Length: 186
Ligand SMILES: [Zn+2]
Image (cartoon, rainbow, N blue to C red; front, side):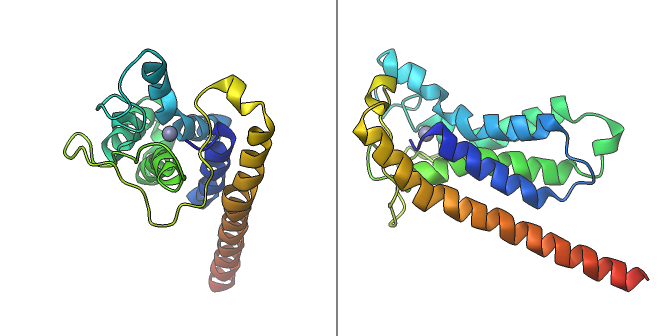
């Protein structure tokens, strides 16, 4: 895994693309939760579930099917109101992307087993060819060492700065579109 901080940063950066009239706090909180929830499988890992099992680390909870199920569940329960009727497809896409972004980052780390993107249909574990992200230890004490600092620095360079750049580009594109629309209607 990358650290939870890095996963949340990416989810928040992606949230800028939603372009909703008013974004409620729960959307940001749920987006952040989506970005870290796949690592719930660490509990099984600590309880002795083999790493390469379906329910092992980077298994089913890191799959695209899981991201789909989580996004459907969130939109069906937290965005039921009439005011969301025209935005649900975008909300679904956002929560799916926020959840799946976790597995994408994990597949770019330099350690552990690959990610089972296609469970329950295919058990193959995948890594991307480009893997610049330092893998984060699964145990909390191991993180509070010099290695922890090294990992945070690596994530700042490879995840946080690109995410910030992405957020700025999205905001810039939205602003340009808003200016274009107001010019077209004036
Ligand atoms: Zn993970």
